[in-house]
Picture (cartoon, rainbow, N blue to C red):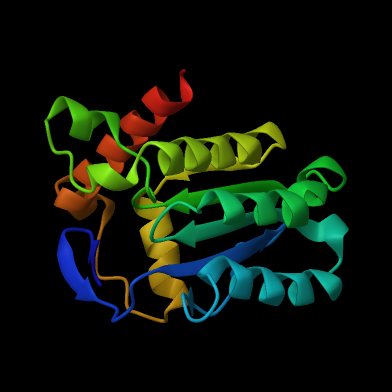
Amino acid sequence: MTALVHGEDWSVGIKYFAVYWLKFYGGNDLLHSPMFENTDQHAEDNLLRHLRLQLSVINMDRLESLTIMQSSSPCHTCSEKYVRDLRELTTRWGVLVTVVFSSVYHIQRPSCVRGNHLHGGHIFGLYSDLNKTGLRKLMAVGIQVRSTCYQDWINLRAALQLPNTYSAETYSFSSRKREDDALRQDLEEIFSY
């Protein structure tokens, strides 16, 4: 896959990825996970296994937030797994949990329908409804769902130990920013009905 990071073609050589970072109260540093990709399991399965191990050894009173960044939104099955495994973080511990992504998985985007860009239209319908329901279930248990933004790309670069060569100004004029904003508007429309 070629991912666009701030308008730059950036080949990461994988089709689907997920990574997370933890932020603790009183600290500016983020604890980054490795990058997980689809193998014989979904990337989310590998991420959750790693995250459960991390959470078993940290002081939960110190954990402020968990951000999961994915190349695409979770499918309905992975959304259910997130609800099962992450609900307690939001309800019991008050941790801000966010799932961010740079595209949607098998959900027809309203902007594509309006623009008559019905790519992959045959896979939508039932899958689209199931995947939208999965994202709504995440939100129902207090997990935030949103499109990527500038800071997410900076955090991803840090997680991958890549140099940060982009400024907020560069991002503001990039095709990546336009796509992030378009997805944000599509998500607002999807969740409004």
